[in-house]
Image (cartoon, rainbow, N blue to C red; front, side):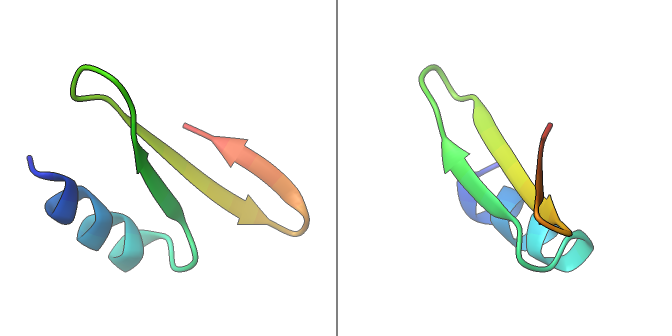
Length: 40
């Protein structure tokens, strides 16, 4: 799955989420709900 695919799916499922690319083909998805950060 490309970074663009990950970002589009994250935007579709979690509007306002942020996706960052980490080392070695890993991704960090951050979604903020009610002032609390949730990292998955």
